[in-house]
Image (cartoon, rainbow, N blue to C red; front, top):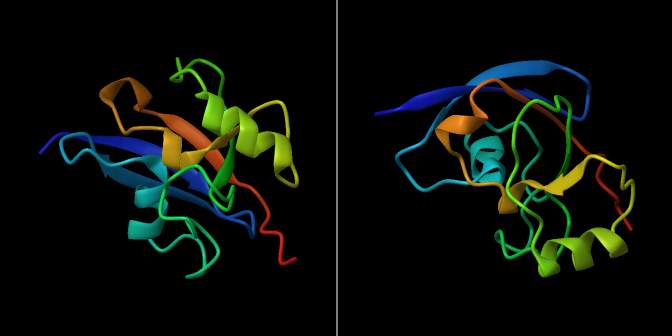
Length: 112
């Protein structure tokens, strides 16, 4: 197994250093769910299809080369709440060894 370390800041502001496997074809949203860092039903509502923005996160460190945003991701972020310049949909970020040391913050959940 080939794991990387990712720091995930939950919605309460607590930082969690977690292991994320690079050999299981997972995305960042799935890692957040795996470690139960957001209440059930508040992240990945669409199942990771870039159709809801419930998995929105902020990329906190800039030294990581992130995959380009797809049209679907850009479109969903255009409709989302709490969007910042560093917003991404965590379901669209595959876990790869280049992300070792990544720090992300989970965006607030819009209850409306």
